[in-house]
Image (tube, rainbow, N blue to C red; front, side, top):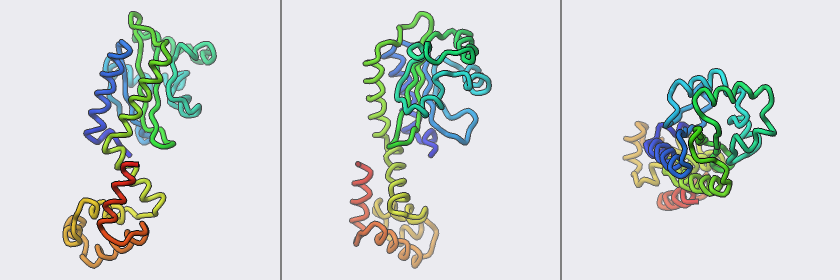
Length: 232
């Protein structure tokens, strides 16, 4: 799911960066949506610049001791570079320390945000030489919980979660999912026919399959059911 294309997600990334920089008194922050299809995943940043981001993904990600791969493999939610430096900074990580120093940063807090059991986004807050330290773990944990809660409240995130439930647990096809959402929006069969550009008889067939797969009897029940799993 390309969350970064949705307006509410774009706005959330910007607000999260501003909030994190203010709270932690940091020079820079970057919010990244997970997208394995792109060499440089979609991100919103302040204080880093395109050159640093490009250099990281091109040359230094493999040397990063708190890289996204490390965070995901350890099921971490928040870590700081300084906290794990003694354990993970080996000779192989020296290039990353040099990379950070080149751009004037001395520490970093990395956050992972989850939807159910899937990681969907990262936040990295970078500390400059004259910034406040990132050593208050309780503040970092509370900040993570606050951002996580608000992220899952976004309409785009809730809609994607609902649609995934409908396809994975109720086995709706892509077309049936579209029909179910249109039913929940209050459209009649004729309106769905026009919206999807399919024959009325085909719409009726899909509606019947949606009702059967969801174990429901009426269109109003479909709307109520979709609302209930969206609010879950």
